[in-house]
Structures are given as structure tokens and as C-alpha cells.
Length: 168
Image: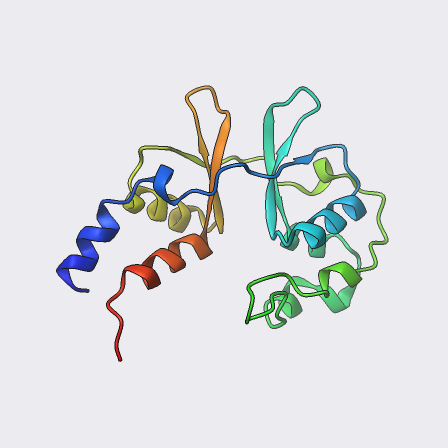
């Protein structure tokens, strides 16, 4: 990696990389409502908020697919299928076509372990946390655990691509 690329990447903070105005979901939503929300907003995951407004977990497309009771969408097959339109980065209509045969709520399928970083944490700290925890998104929070942003693995890839020297 070139020295200028190294310097560019190391100087980036979580605040500079994060997407503010994070869309969240309610722990009381049905899995069907969640799938529709993800399809409508082309999301692959979101923070889960309790009825009292507290951050209580994270939920993703993988969680939905794991609980659809539809072998066609098992996680093994899912890893081979493209749920994204490779040209636009948006979710394909596949997720919108899922037939959810479950009365499960978001609270039943979400991951309760919340992994977050501080807004001033470096890119190295953010990438390290994501790598060590095998996660595709991480929340940027205040000292009071309020979400002020989200960073996805695609945000990291986009930054590396934008910082890399372009060849003719």
C-alpha cells in the first residue's frame, strides 16, 4: 500500500466514515414487517430499539433468512445467491419475495450483543472491532449509548477504493 493511501486511511475517524440518521426497527415488529422494511429501504441490517427507545440489539437479512422456515433460503444457499444488484448495490427483489411463514417478532431473531465504537475512534479501531467480531456493521454511539451513526463493511470498502490511486 502506498504511503499516501496509508496516511489517508489512518486519518479517518468513525465520525467521518459513518452514515448518520440511522434507520432503526422496533423489537415488537413481526418478521414480515421487518422484511418489508428492509426491502423498501434497501437495507441489509438495522439497530433494534425497545419500546422505551433503548438500543437492544441488531437484526439483519441473515436473521430473517434463518427464521423463514424456507429451505430455499437457508444460510448455505444464501451465501451463494446475490441479494444485491451488483450494479446499484441495492437489495434485489429476492428479499421482497420471501414468504415468511412465521409469527416471530424481531425480538425473537435479533442479536442482543451490541458492538459499537466511539465517534472519534480511528478507522483501524473500527475495522479491528468488525473483524474480531465477524460483523458487517457497527454502530457509532455516544457515551450514553445513543446511536449517532452506522458503519458497514461496504463503507470501509468504498473508502479504500476512493483513497486508492487510480490507474489509466
